Image (cartoon, rainbow, N blue to C red; front, side):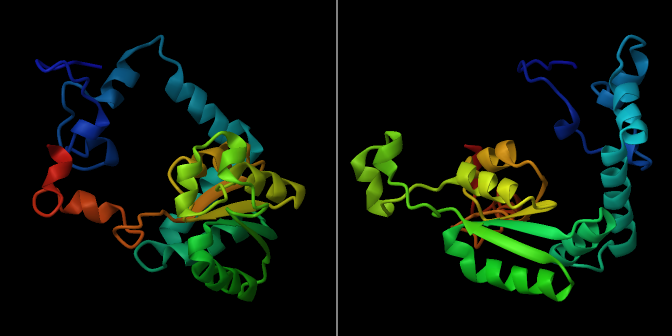
Amino acid sequence: MKQDSNNIRRSCIDCAAGACDGKSGTYPDFCLTCELLSEEDNPLIAETLDKYTSDPEDSLIAKASATVEYEHYCKATRVEEICAFAKKIGAKKLGVATCVGLLKEARVAAAIFRRRGFDVVGITCKAGAVRKTDIGLDPEQEDLGPHICNPILQAEYLNKEKTDLNIVIGLCVGHDSLFYKYSDALCTTLVTKDRVLGHNPVAALYQTDSYYSRLLK
């Protein structure tokens, strides 16, 4: 991976060519695809391909997700794609890990899943009512509410329920990370929390040349 004069390591996030996606662009000199293919002692491509072809679970998930994309591209909403994906991997029981602030949305999502034949169990981030001071947070942080978000409890509860696929609805930044870490079941995200932008965080990226230019300063 090459570094420029500003000591920035260039990688895929600095590229707009799209050559690796089958487009007509030219591979840049820092292209990771070229790097991975040119290094004979680099086993990453072969190792990942082996997982897709030899590991039954990885193979099922990879084929199911690619097929959902093919069958529903620009036609189905994300909640519909989650339903399609769950069916393709044989999931029967869905777990919903939701923020307490999005319980209304979680109820609607659960109704959609149930109408499509899934068994659904959900748990909110505040379940258990553990106080923030119990984990060493300052008492002043209880001004936003006395109880912690408890993503580890959410994950462990759904583990106990033996869910086949867990769906995250609006867990806070970091809390979602802990949920993914402790979940036994495969996870996907339906809603990504952004309180300022109505849970549409990409809006800030679209507007860095106007309303959110401060983000690049």
